[in-house]
Image (tube, rainbow, N blue to C red; front, side, top):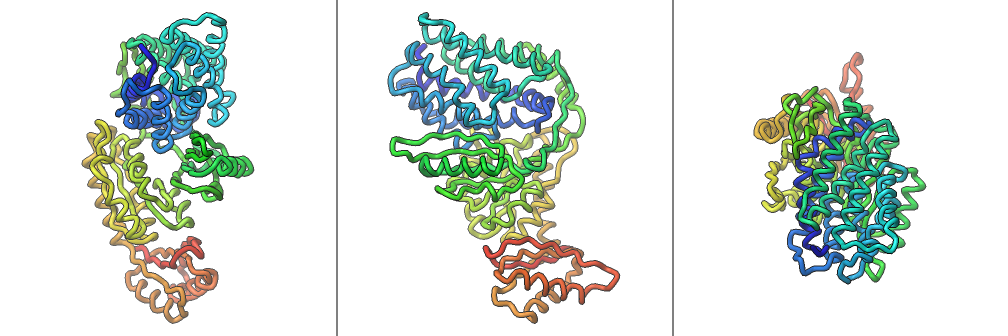
Length: 535
């Protein structure tokens, strides 16, 4: 069978179907290696995104067209370092091709370009690197021998699997979850090209055998302080803008992966996945930032063993016999804000934060729901503009492929209301496993607590030309609700003076034996100042 866009599209669908079944297993492999137990989930969503983006391709389209379509979809919808690595591999293939049909010579050139993807992705020195070296060595060892395209692709895939086995044996038997995902993408392409699932079955058997010889303990690790947050950036601009962003990240010492490509005029879009201690430090200084998405990098809590998964098989292999640790059943909480100073506080609450979201972010806003086992998501707007954007999420985004997503929108209208809701709702979970079966219960729990969070707070705006007596009156009005905590969003240029005035007034209102609980969030001089009383 010819290797064309139709084959590529089918391979993504095969990979998505496989990863839907294998995601819990791959997540656990990530945890065994001390990761945050999300590689399988990220790969599942990435493959689904690639399949969805290429579903309109036909067999008459050359492979280069399909790769271009997949890259554009991946820039917008790939997740994690693993997802960006997959897109980077596709980009390396695209760069090695022209519009000609795929001959054995062209295929070899394309496949031998794969290791160049590791320069853009955080995978140097990893099992992925060793796996690709083995696969490329197999092709180079063929010399002048030119097998047909399907046979050549199969030789590359088989050698990659062997390379993964060798890399696992040299790394204390811990399977590299990211390398396993890359091997699955290769095997799915082979399956689509030859219309034969043998390579996928071989990979499943190999993973099961390697897992059986390794450690069974899943221990997700909290990130080091310099990697406390993950930031996803989509940058639009020139190659110079790309170089400037990379120089900025290198100077900061941030761990990052990137993927994308430019057109003939040097203009393009690039996706960055960044681990950092300070999200705003990695905000691009050049080009146009199409997306700035921040999340707390700490792994989700676990609640014991999912014994129901014991003995579950896939392709006749008991892949899940290791009794994986069950993550708690949460809803995804997504906050949209226009205030950069709010980003870290919102992310630390457990929310997924989109800074200055645009119309192009509509599909991205529901990506966290696709990662949640419950498929439940609460979108929390911080102003009426963000509310209007959230309300534009259509049925096409609520239902992607066969995934039913349960999306609700909170009634918040300012930044501090959004913070109160996210701090209340993001930690909530349903204690028993169940995935979609507990979605209705979790949705009711989220909606009830979002409403309660709004009722438990009272917020007032402080005018930019405030006088002390104005602040005093506002404080007296809020004090009538008997608050136990106060939050100030300091957005005025004279924020330091405002903070001092508030502390003086609060101390005069509070008995001597009681300390004042005032939290200050510095957003100056970006926005209006808000004072919030919390019961």
